[in-house]
Image 1 (tube, rainbow, N blue to C red):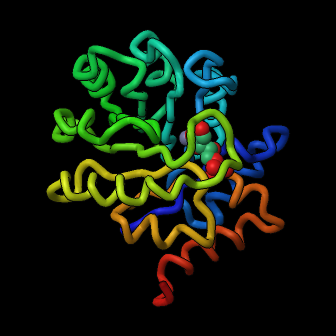
Image 2 (tube, rainbow, N blue to C red):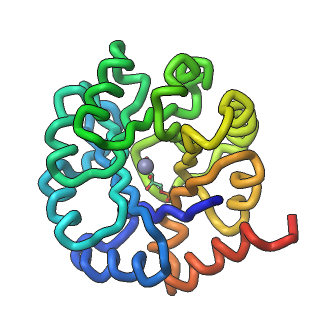
Length: 219
Ligand code: DX5
Ligand code: ZN
């Protein structure tokens, strides 16, 4: 079962309450929150105090994507701020298993993210411990970039490694009406969409169109 996961990065932060409400009204269940530190990626967004504020505004599942160095130092803060899922980049850490355990200690769902150039073999040893694998389909750092088509093969290969329905495969970057069906057909279940939704004239209508596009029989 696929799910559209709106990414707040492209939303209007001066009206967070309204942006979250429209995501709820469009019957999405999950909100993707991009945390960037200016080191791992060349952009800075927000930290746990904003996650905490968002937590007070919505009951949506908060899917926190940490694009930061030394994520192990911040797991506790993000857990306490009300994150539901915490995903870190495998490129940033050496003690992968310890960080997964730390996230689970706080009873949160644990995810690993892979940059477009990081092979899926790197995540294979941890698959049975993870709740999700976040496959980046752009180089992380900014919304509004173009989907890297080679990632489709990577999603298919990862799907082949996963037996059963855990971990979930989430794909992030450049997903829109034109390519969403290919991403789902490749084996992804969680589709992060930022600019496609929040830069649309009518974001709620766009969420409906993205859902319809996946369900349509047209290839
Ligand atoms: C990029 C972020 C994405 C971003 C996706 O580094 O991780 O979550 O919001 O935005 P779009 O859908 O515009 O590529
Ligand atoms: Zn993201």
